[in-house]
Image 1 (cartoon, one colour):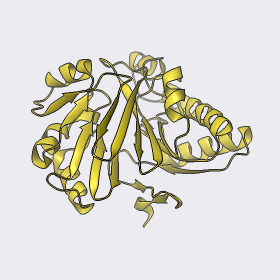
Image 2 (image 1 turned 30 degrees about the vertical axis):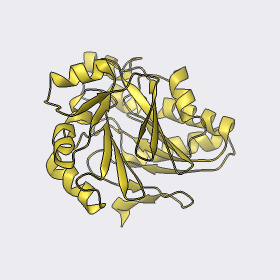
Image 3 (image 1 turned 120 degrees about the vertical axis):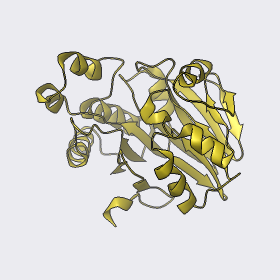
Length: 253
């Protein structure tokens, strides 16, 4: 997730490889010394893979809590790091960032709230279950980026081993379409309209069309609060949001 403001950028997670990620940043006019930070939610490879290269090439610090930095150092060499304790707030250029703890099978996973130019973005992927920290993070966000990893029926019928199915569906695994929809309906009822991106969809146990249809229909059945919903694809830059405008699904153009 790239957040841009005034020609500067802030990157949340870096799971794409540097051959994909660095050119994608350059196409969005983020070059050397224009990236203020790379925030890590946790140390799993699909969130960490490009962090070292992007940090080095663009001269941007990698930001995470102590446990995540320690675990990440066992997987890759991060040279320019800054520690930010879970639940604390930091300032990186024009971006104000606050982390909140979530449940996942990692060292100390977090989500982030980014505030810039009067707007608030909440980002939470790899979420085992709804929790108070996650609810607080989504509160008041103009853009809510939330994991909608799997459909429970597809997971149960799918090719994963029993152990892997139990892990994915467990309280430290991943959020289902059903759980994501219920949490988002709760957020809309409590705080009003928002733009929503469903993220971190499984390539095996979900699909963009299924997630979009299920979550949209479930939210509409639960609340009349208006919302805009898009899918953030798992393998390439896709959705784009500008304050005051409807979301755009770039993959459709």
